[in-house]
Image (cartoon, rainbow, N blue to C red; front, side):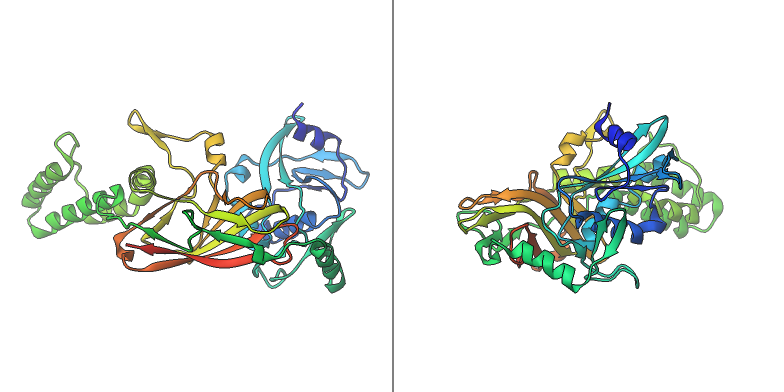
Amino acid sequence: MNPLARIVRSATPSTAVQFQKRAYGKAGVERFLRDVIAMANASVEGTRYIITGVEFDKKDRKRMYGIDRADFSGKPAYQSLANDHIEPPIRIRYQPVTVEGERVGVFEIGDCQDRPYMMRVDYSEKLRRGDAYARVNNAAVKLGRRQLQSLFERKFQDSVSAANVEIGFPGDIIHKDLRVATRSFGKLPSMVASAKLHELIEAKTRVHASASNTIVARLTHARLFGTDSPYEERSTDEILEEMQKLERRYKNQDEHFLFEENVTPIQIVLLNQGDEEIHDASLALVMPNHNAFHVATQLPRIPRDDKFIERTPAEQAGYPSVSLHDDSIHVSVKLGDILPGEPIDVFELPMRICVGDELKGRRLGIQYSLFAQNLRTPAKGKIRLLFE
């Protein structure tokens, strides 16, 4: 039997296992963040579990309700929500499990050795930066100053100074700046398609007579798209509507152009300069977002036989967790234990970026924060990309 299915079948509500009747979904993000923080701060060893689609009634009978398949589609992106709102970073995985013919959801929250965990930024009026909870028996309890102080004191015993950590770009020495070549986006597939449709609209508007307009449009269509592409009479509004769909239509082609043909791989190294091992480390990066600065959120699909196929889960697992926001990009990676003395690569697979020539001559700062079980305080600093 699947180990997770066995847990769903046999477990009862406890400090390490929580049951919830319904999926969190978009309306339950606040509760999700609170429950994850509470689980991470619980006084238990090992993995913790939140099981959705299962409830215990008033007579302590377990009832299966099931979870809709759409809740596992990445909307909402539970891992990204945790990365963006909780510090230190938490390793969390959400997956479906079938038990007694019902599909339930199981959140696995990794062994949490870097307590206390708390809100990194405000989410709502009820869930603010610095808020922390801990699961006690079968409830989430908000932590006060005394409880937080106790957790911090425990953490700082036999702790390592953040001054012993060096983070930067690889080389003969660890560099704080990295020069990155910019690229022209003129041949980005969606931009090429957009330019052709713009030209088709201009051809249609240059001639007012309907018969001539159709002839000009046909000739322009044949020149732009080739004679093998059949002509369809479309209004200007219909062409404009098609242009709005180009980014989605050419998503795979664009990602292949950006992150395969014109990619710049970015690796970061970390050096523990102290004498003691750093335990259960994780690194969080935050950088500005810009329409000419592209970071892959996953490995691009592979072109094969006129279509694009997905990478295997094993391939994707080695790529760092990247989440995009309107004004910022967040990257997180779990590092585990770090021995002293030798630089280590932060990413199993380098982060993939592509920078447009609009940014040539400019620089971009990357804020980093290293969290670890025995770091006295997080190691924080900035490294920079210099675009040329």
